[in-house]
Image (cartoon, rainbow, N blue to C red; front, top):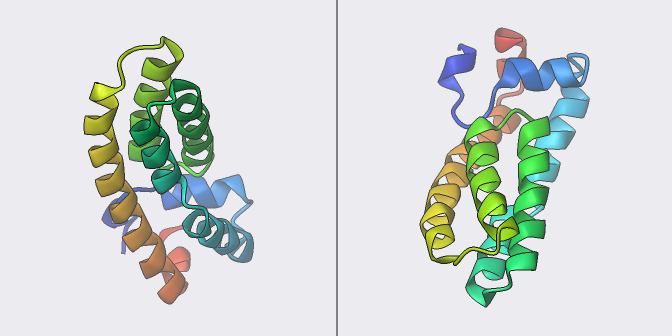
Amino acid sequence: MRNDDIKGLDVVKGMALVGKNKMVYTRLLKSFIGNDFCNQLLAAVESGDTEQVRQKAHSLKGVAGNMHMEGLFNLSREIEAAAKEGLNLTPAHELITQIIEMNSVTINSINMILENPNILDEIS
């Protein structure tokens, strides 16, 4: 398996972040799944509270950036920017749909790694 076969995250960069420590990396992946960032962001968008949207998008952006989840990072950055500028959140609804799809892809990849930790040896 190659790094490009894993959708939603860059395993090579993620493993480098933790000094190629598989146990730490898998703990981070489990933590990501355990935090419901996307649903929190969705709830904030539905409430129309731009400050909450900004905060939730910022949190997701930070985690996604640190863990090299580029798709989620870029989408959450767009939502954060719109909320920061106080813009109408209607475009955020469209981005939320994309985030939910990307989050699903990312979580599927994470689950594949968690179920087959030897993947990390093959990739890193």
